[in-house]
Image (cartoon, rainbow, N blue to C red):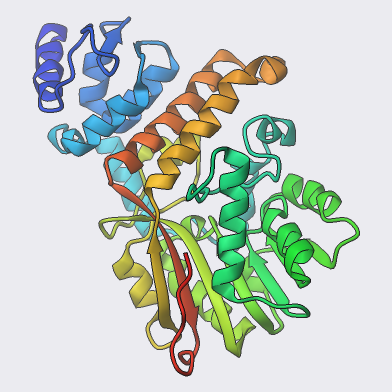
Length: 373
């Protein structure tokens, strides 16, 4: 297809989302390189993301642009490239979240520099959705989420808690300080483990560099916040079996995860290549299959609109503090990270992605579980 036909085709597709090329609305796109049209038609989401990184196009409100694109299902109007189809087949054939791959995947995203994340996140370094009920700042929203998680788990003094995918120890530190529990946290990121251990120094908290499949022991409570997205559909059942084996019979497990409306076996190709290698968003159906016969669902809470707010707050911090870290990264990285944060915000705004907190027990709580919000 020649460039003029490609431009016409893209323009026609964008009209379904009320987006114009070089229009006056903040969600309209400004094309800087005419090769943009053919690239998007050839490579779809991957081409759109890469061409943005390369300054082929811009948008004043990228978050709103992505929300409109997703609401209108424009991705379904662009054919898939054979190269992308082959990569999907490879994902289906091989376990891209094996134990060896897990550490590699963790390093690619979480080991890009602790200074970077301290300039983007809240003061507790919580890298997951905040809970904005009665919160006026990112710091308040994240403390709300940590406390909400503790209250849902009904944790009490002296309990042993396991945090799978503990990050920099934000939940572990909060729970140990506020609820007088001992916490074991595991992560596949060396930088997270090192800084997390320092942050939790002096508390009954141990941060380990470990894959979840190597877990042993019994715990009163288990929490996993923003980690299940890295497990992969081939390992969902294994993950739940590990949790079941490590949870005491009268214990509770809190799963906090981004979720998809549809069951899938692969992620967006741009995100897989540049942001979260090996990541995959589970559906309710996939989670249900993974927990069948192992757990009773006590509570399910969807507060996905709060992730839109969280991502926009991260984006604000990232842009505001860019000068403090820009000597460590280049302009392509800056545009890549903006695209990541703003397109994710758009996906939650479009209600294509969800944020679930699910409370699970092994045998059901006698008399019933009392939900909290």
